[in-house]
Image 1 (cartoon, rainbow, N blue to C red):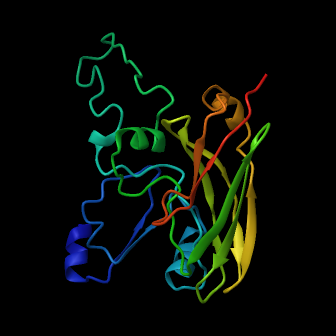
Image 2: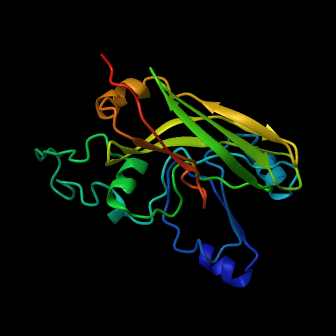
Length: 229
């Protein structure tokens, strides 16, 4: 049905009210896509204000939108189609490498990456500096280079740990900026994330941090940490 509507009117904007990612074979034909999730009783007004331009969208995807089920760690679930109560063993071979981490490991490109989101304005990043001590601290500048006020959600990722490819979200922050204005963002790691990464960051070898992977031109820098005692 969506493809039929797009064919009849190429200026169609598709609004998805779903609780999960869905297949979108029509996505390259749609003029725009709004992911509204289950937006509740006031969802209609919120969607209308975004479509009309009264409100500048600033949401970011909390999950990856896979291009197809083959990109997932388990495209074929063991026991699927067997009679009810059939004993089944599922081995979660991916371990902690789920979602965007699994895509980074396999190199597969999703339809829309974790953290992706668009706006009616544009933002530039500059001057990324990462320092390491008992924790990781990143500083960089966010500038609204568009013509209207808007909110951005810059993100910081660990992309390489001691020469080993390892994708981890370290921090994020929501920034609201007037046109032409800049703000320096300081991002500490997400609570609990640092302790989970200690094993791979404890060697004193160089590591790599990258801003906002869904962006076309993210900033990247190397940093190193002293060995923990």
